[in-house]
Length: 418
Ligand code: AMP
Ligand code: GLY
Image 1 (tube, rainbow, N blue to C red):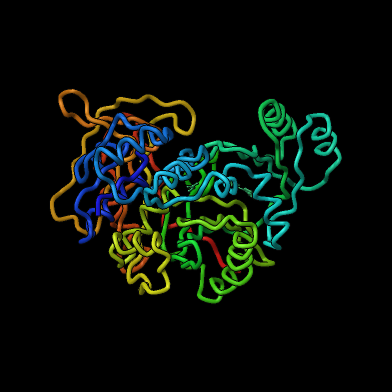
Image 2 (image 1 turned 30 degrees about the horizontal axis):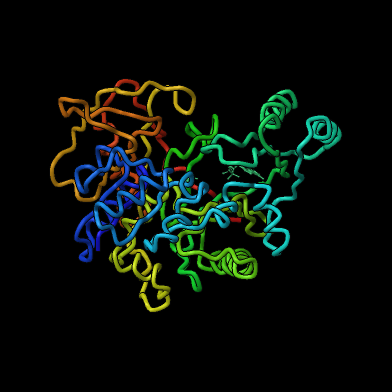
């Protein structure tokens, strides 16, 4: 099987790593890829994932049998639709289904139509209406830009001035969704879909806030764990019956089913699980901790998704825990420099640790440089969360570049179940 992965983050490095261990793979390409994927696959740096034409051309030139789309942007612009027209097998949703992620207003009305538990919400297109609403409500609320925002489209604040500033900016270009603020703990649930049936993967948690103790601004994710100790078997049952089943039935009824990954961002509240958001792809940094725990051959898994034969595939529960720590550039999630020289001082024989690159590159002399905000995810594997976290933090300080920073409490600060 000749596989092309689209994207250049640590999620795509983890996907490439998992595919590279498959017995089914004869060639592996990543477009555009990063310095990490370049060590285990062939990067196609000139192919832009959002250009259907360039992706199709690459598939023809490299005789690709299967495309796996990592990030949301190519999905939202219809790259999957274009590949399907050319009869190229692809894992990812059509642009129509991708609205579940690309439009929060669409996702919210889908949830209402299909009785999927979610936060109470109101959608606005006009600033005066929104201002009147915010000034009269006594509820604590969260404001969300409806469209894609790379993890930066949500504001939760008790400061009316800050909320109004965000609303004014957002409403100039998009709809705004206002939601009641939900208390609880978050978990990320990934559902593999083969077009007719589905399989729920082990639960993950993403540490979204920039600083220790869940303080500071939201980020794309500063760390992750899998599985999540507070997501018990009985909670997983509730998640399946109350959230996943009505979602999957709704997708079927509305002609939105697809071959790919559905990501449910949940808040586990006192009343039960509620959906904060849908995404139509794997999460980053959750993929980096999820994939090392799956015992399945990635080629077999991909084939089962594409041929609609997931139910025939055995899945073992994970026998380890994984903790992922993200190392970011100075200034992230605000503005940050690129091109910082990286020194990876990793001792040989560290087989309980994995290092996934995000948007790294090599300069003309072959030296490793940063090329983004979140630069690496270091993943520790252990018999439990304490061992996994300790393994990750043994290696984290050995990933060196000017101003590198990371949270110190990933896998240590855990939510309490109700
Ligand atoms: P979203 O992009 O909708 O997942 O929102 C990003 C992050 O904002 C979530 O992961 C939560 O940490 C927070 N958030 C979003 N919606 C709510 C809500 N209704 N109540 C509390 N926190 C929320
Ligand atoms: N971990 C958050 C996301 O992938 O959207």
